Length: 354
Image 1 (cartoon, helix red, strand yellow):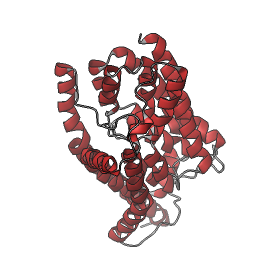
Image 2 (cartoon, rainbow, N blue to C red; image 1 turned 30 degrees about the vertical axis):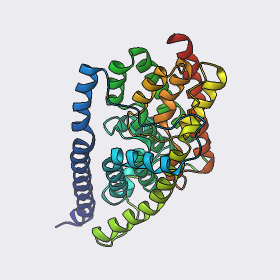
Image 3 (spheres, one colour; image 1 turned 135 degrees about the vertical axis):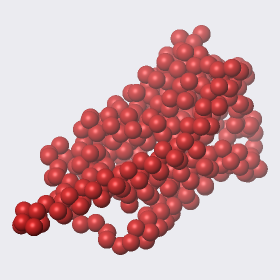
Image 4 (cartoon, helix red, strand yellow; image 1 turned 60 degrees about the horizontal axis):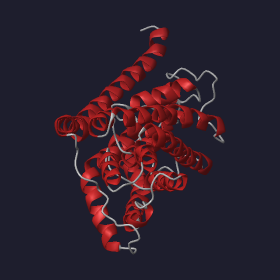
């Protein structure tokens, strides 16, 4: 073996190992999404097309009701029964991102603070179809592997707001006008707001300068895979789960106060519903039956359309879950952007959906 062969062999071994780990990760993703999302949503889509419904509203609180911890427990029970499989899978993927996808490879592909990486992050989110809380652990794992702010945010936000299944449900249960509004503002949030977040980030993960070839990789933890995985899984669990549980209980207790159904289509109602929708937490696509029930109760098209975007985009639990992965400035920027987009969509809905 020549000296040149000896020099190229480590690089070849690294490339083969990288490819194998990526293939394993993709297999886990496809198998998990098939079980948790794709197959169940296929049946739900058939129900939406044939019956023009996907179920009843998850909200049960009454306006001006007293603070109720029984309501908190009841809502938490219904919520977690609905999402626990996706939540477990999200935490699992968030940990596997850190141990299966090589550090320098992921940084090379998604580490630059460019619109291209933001676009890739948003496009990769489309098959996931997760709620914001289930996608949050994955976004946190991506940040730990030096994925840029924009790409991580685009993945996190794109999962709920550009969910293809939800758009199909919405078209048949509500109308194509709701779907169009959701799609336009969903694209704005996923790609526009995420890219702007790169511009205001204090310390971007990577600059626009050329990142070194991934064969020149940084030293990585060489401990056994199982140990590295358990470490990543444990740290991620501690980061996301306690805040998740507490926030869901608190929001469940206050659900009767957050959505004043007696208000019609005033600007104040749109503002209140946009803020409440941004904070409240729901399972995937639950905004559709919530809006149906609110419209039946006489809530105006403006406030209802504000919920169309703000309910799925982010929530107080998901914002708390990613608070250690993004700066406070970025988290606040995302929350305010969701509220603003919710207000704008509500104003459009007030006139378009009369």
